[in-house]
Amino acid sequence: MAPQPYLLSARSIVKSFGPTTVLKGFDLSIAQGEVHAFLGGNGAGKSTFIKIVSGQHERDAGTIEFDGETVGASVAAYVDAGAIAVVNQELALLPHLSVAENIAIPRLRRATRSYSERASEAIAIEALSLIDPHFARESVGRLVGDLTLHERQLVEIARALGSGAKLLLLDEPTANLTAAETGRLFAVIRRLVVGTGLAVLFVSHRMREIRQIADVCTIIRDGKTAIDRVALNAITDREIVECMGQSTAAEDHVGAASDGGVPRAMPKETSAAQGEVIAIHHAGIGLTIRPGTIVGLAGAPTGPAALIDALTGLSAQQTWDVKRNDAPVKYRSPAAAARAGIGFVSGDRSNKGILATLPIIDNLMAARRIVEGRGVARNDELAEGTRLIEALNIRARSLWDLPSTLSGGTQQKLLIARWLALKPKLLVLEEPTRGVDIRTKREIYALIRKMAEQGTAVIWWSTEYIELAELCETVLAFDLDGKPTCVLRDAQVNEAALANATGMAA
Image (tube, rainbow, N blue to C red):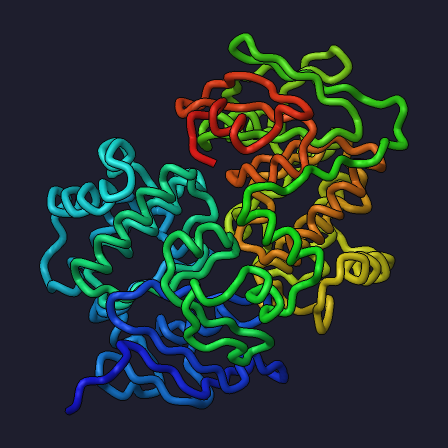
C-alpha cells in the first residue's frame, strides 16, 4: 500500500444526537511530527470529534483513515492497541484506584502481563517525572479520588504521554496547570514530536499557548470546517476569532491577551453601601473582603485551594482564620456554608459541579434547595429555570434534558446560574473559565461583575494572570509552597507583578 500523506485523515464526518446534528460533514487531517491546533467555540463540535477519534463515539457518516488503514465504524481498536491516546476535558481516571494503577494498568493489559505493584509504580514514576518529578515520587501510592483537580490533570496527562501512542489527543490539557507545568508539558511534547514523529491534536482556548506549541490549525464552526490546515504563522488572532464566529469584544480580548496588554475593567460602584465584611488571615497575611469587591487568588494550587476549603466548608482542617463582621466562623460542610450565604463554583465540572444524572432544572435549582433545606421540586421552579437559562443565553432544548447535551462552557454557565438569583454574600470561584471559549468567558465575566455590582463579594482563583489583571482590583498571591506572600492592589495587579509575587511565569 502506498504511504498516506497524513497519519489521520477524517473526511465528511457526521454525528447526530437525537434530532441535533453536531458534526455536519467535518474534515480534519493530521500529519506525523506536528502539533495541530483544533480551534472552535463551545458547542462547535470539538469534543464530539475527539470522542469519535478516540473511540468513545461512532460516527454516523464519513471516512477515517489512520496510519494507512481505512477505519471501520469505530476507532476503539486503535485506542485499545495503544496507537491513540487521549486526555479528555472531563478527566477519565478511576478514583478508587491509585495513581500508579491508573497510569500502568492500561499498558500492562496490552502487554498481557500479570499486575505487579512494583512495576506499576516504576511506570507511573517514569511517566509523571516527565512533568513533575517531585509529584511523581510522592503521589504514586495515593488514591486518585484523594487528589485535587490539578493533581488529577497531571496524572491524566502523564498516562497519555507515557503510552507510546502515535497520535495524542489533548482536549484542554493545560486548563488547570500552572505556567511552569505547562512549560514542562510543552517541552515534553516538542521532544516527542521531534524524536518519535508523534502527532498531537491540541485543543485550547488560550491563544498564547496555541502559538507557543502548535504548527498548524483547523477551525470548526457550527459542526463544519471553517479553516482546514492553515499555518499559524499565516493567520492572525483576529482572523482566528472571526472564523470561530466570536464577538467583537472577544476579538479585542484575544488580541490584547496575545500582546499581554489588556486593561482591567473595574466593576461599577456596588449598590450595597453597607454589608457584611469578611476578614481572612494566615501566616502574617491578612485581607478584608467587602461587599461588591472582586478579589483574585494567584499562585500554585496548594495555597488557593486551602483558602477555598476554609471559606466553603470543603475541609475540616483549616489553616486560615475566617471572620464575618468580626465573628470567627468555621463551616462543617459546603451545605452549611451555602446556608450562610457562601456560594461555590468549580472549574471541575464533572466532580464538583454538574449532577450528570439529573436534568438541567435540578442542576439549576440545586443550590436553592440546599439553602432552603428542601429536596422536593416546586411548581415555580420551571418558571425560574426558564428565566435563568434565558438570562444566561443557555441554549437547551428542554429543562428536562441532561447536562451532557450541553457544551462544557454552557455547563459552566449552568453552575453560575445556580447562584444568580440567590445573591450570595460571598461567591467563591475556582478556575470558573476552565475549558471555555473566549465568548463564554466574556459572558461569565459580565455575570460576575453584575453580581458584584449587586453587593456580592467575589473571590476568583485563576491560573491565567491576564484574567486576574482584567477582573480584580485586589489579588492575594501565594508562593510555590502554597504560602501567602503579599496582597496586590489596583495598579499593582498586572501580569509581571503577579509572576514576581508567585514565583511563576505569567
